[in-house]
Length: 406
Image (cartoon, rainbow, N blue to C red):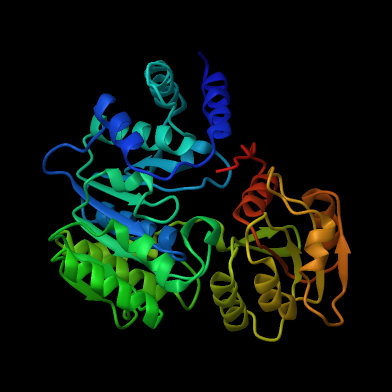
C-alpha cells in the first residue's frame, strides 16, 4: 500500500462519523500497544479556544528545555501529517503508511470499526513510543469526558477558555460544556485552568475537588517574554502552558523558556503571509469567543485599517454570532463555500449576515474570492473556518490540500 492509498483508506473511515466514548479507543490502544510507557509524562489539553496555541507553547518550551516531545493536535490545516509530530517534525510518509497498514488489518479484526480520530490517536501514540518521547502533549478532539484522547492516562489536565461550541454534542450551556471539558481531570493529578466564565469555573472546581485533583487557576498573563504568536490572548495561553509544564515537574530555565516562547509555531491563528503587494492574515476564528479575540487583535495590530474579509463556515457553528463581530472590521465581505461536506451555501451565509450597509459579494470558490480581493490594495483577512484557512494556506504556499471532514 502506498502513502496515498493509505491516506485514502483512512479518510474513508470518516464515514463512520464521530463516536464519543472510551471503550473503543481503549481497546484499540491496548491491542496496538499504544499506551505510553512507564515514566512518560502526558499533558492533556481541553477547552473551546486556545487549545492548539497552548499545546504549541508547551511543546516548544519542553523541546527547548531538552525534552523529546510528541505532539498530537487536530484538525490539520493542509496535510494530515501535521497532526502527529515528534521533536517538532511531522511524521514521515513512510512511518505513517507503515502504521496505517498495520492499523487497517487490526481494525478489520475488531467487532466495531474504529473512527478516523481513534485510528489517528492510536497511530500517534504508538509512534511516540517508537520514538521514545519523554513528554506527550495531547489536544482533545471535541469535549473531553468522552473524547478518545481521554483514554490515555494523563499526568496533568489543562483546560483553556470554555465557550459555546459543538453544542449539538456537548450541551447548550456553559456549565454543560464545562462538565464535558472537565471530564479530562484525573484523580489526584494536577489541573491547570485558564480564567473561565463563572459557570465554567464552578463546574471545574467541583470536579477537581471530587477527584482530589489540585487545581491551579492562572490569574494573570505571562509577562517578560517575547512571544512569536500574535494576539492579546497569547500571553494568557503562554501562562497556562508554563503552569502545565511546572505541574508536570519539568525544569524550566529562563533561556529555554525564552527561546521556546519566541520560536513557537502555530499556523492559521493570526498568521500573516505576504503575497505580492498584499498582506494576508489567516485566522480560524469559528465561534463568537474566537471572533471577539480576532477582532481585538486586529484593532491592536492594525488600528484604523479595514480589510477585505473572505469568510466561510460549516454547519452547526454560530455563524451569525461570528459575523456580527467580524463584519464591522471589514470594508468588503466576500462569501465563498469551504471545501467540506458540511459547507454552508451562499444563501445560508447571506442569511447570517448582520444588518447594515456591508459591501457583500458571493463567489463560487475561495480562489475566485481571493482574485476579487486582490483587485484592491487593502489587507485581506481570511477567517471563519479552519477548513477555509487550510485551503487558503495551501493555495498561498503552493502546497497540496488534503480536505478533511474531521
